[in-house]
Amino acid sequence: MRAVWFIRHAESLGNIGEATTTPREIPLSELGRAQADRLAETFPIRPDLIAISPFDRARFTAEPLIRRFEDVPTFSANIQEFTYLAIEKCRGTNSAQRKPLVDEYWGRSDPEYCDGGQAESFSQFLCRLDGFICDLLSREFAIAVAVTHEQVIKALMWMRIAFATEVTSASMAGFYKFMTSFKIPNIAIVPCLFDEEGQSFFGKLTRPESVNA
Image (tube, rainbow, N blue to C red; front, side, top):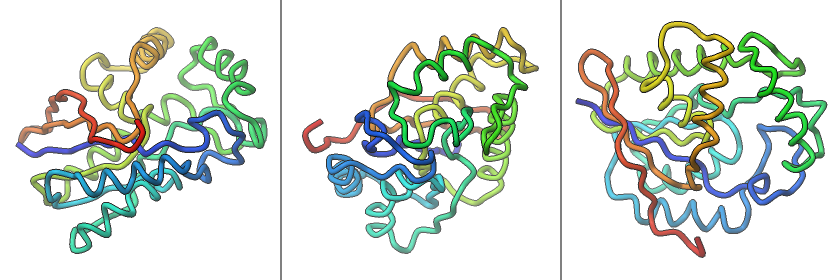
């Protein structure tokens, strides 16, 4: 068995309701920077491999961890957040201002719909995550860390425990219900075991002691 510890990034400015420019460029908040440092200080294992989303909030979360384990191989992985709204529609907005667009997107429940402007469809999102798992499992490790995003972790969990054979409007609606039914806090760790056949088993969500959180 091999283990992958999926970690949600530390608190970002978007998480606290501030306006943002693009999904890629959202920085950490002051608390988020402290959380990233605390995550690295208290991390209980030495991983063999560290995978990182290319989005700023994940990269900045991973930086203290990388400094602590400077000899551990790292790579930028295709585990960035699901960007389903066109970037130009959302530039300079906060989460409250985007909510009508978010509700419209998920209400449409069309897995092939792409909003344009560097967005991806739900089907493309799931395909991207499938590709990441294949890439990850092709590498040598016993314990890997993946610093990523809440929707990514939830999608990986859902794909393994509830997703059947094809992406449909009904399955997309099912994912939305699953996604909105619980929270994964910032810097929470969700462990996953992979057997020799690539079957996965998710464990209990844990969270390191964090600053003011």
